[in-house]
Image 1 (cartoon, one colour):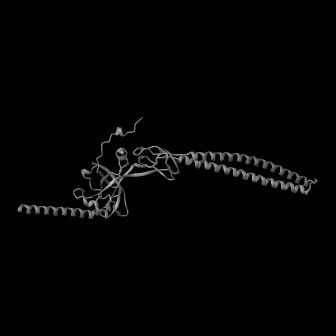
Image 2 (cartoon, rainbow, N blue to C red; image 1 turned 90 degrees about the horizontal axis):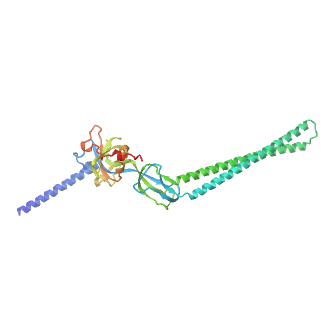
Length: 350
């Protein structure tokens, strides 16, 4: 009977201690977000920590024109280089429009030549009319018999010839404008044909293949979604008690859950000016209910170029930010990266 009482007392004591531990952990999480969950011996003084996921800049390859896709090259997961061709949109209709525009330009050229010939004819007629008027006026001054009616008719013929010449020159200007319009139409259609060849705006890895050959895409229709692996970062959320001490361009470290033996160096590239609700990725509800500031930790581009084949987005991990530049990083947070085979990473000479 005595042993049973002792066992009951022992169980009660264990339950009370467990409840006390849970209360303390929740209390710390409510005070300082994720930073309060970690004990002081885990996060040294002068540092802050939070969790997040690896992210990268996403770029969409979209069609500027509506049409049917005739080809989509890369598959999901493949790497594409900047300005490389990734897809084609059917251009049969555009090529027909281009031929029509070129025919209109040729027709405008012919009309222009005809108009210039008319101008030459009108100039000759005007010159003849002026000479006739001058001759009649000279004869009239010399006392020769020249009727006033003949002089008036000659003067009228000069004015008529001048008007005809101006009309012919206007026609030349109109045909030249028609040539320019046809040329502009050709250039516009050629731009549309060129834009029907979709190119990667930057180097990266194909994240999603959103359309297949034979599908009709609308204006702005997305075909591929690329990940720019030269712009990889982690976004974390820090409470107001900590974020005021975060230095811009300050040092940070990232430890991924999938590879806790490695420590990735990073730097603070952005600190939000306004607080917001912490997203659901933060594990503790009390931390989510508090307002926090978004902080972006950028991984150096030179480092990413070495380990591009290992970079994966969406991988969770823990980030550490140094609040005091005078503090030294502890030994367990010194940069430690996977072995890098320089020969394997170098581009092939073939």
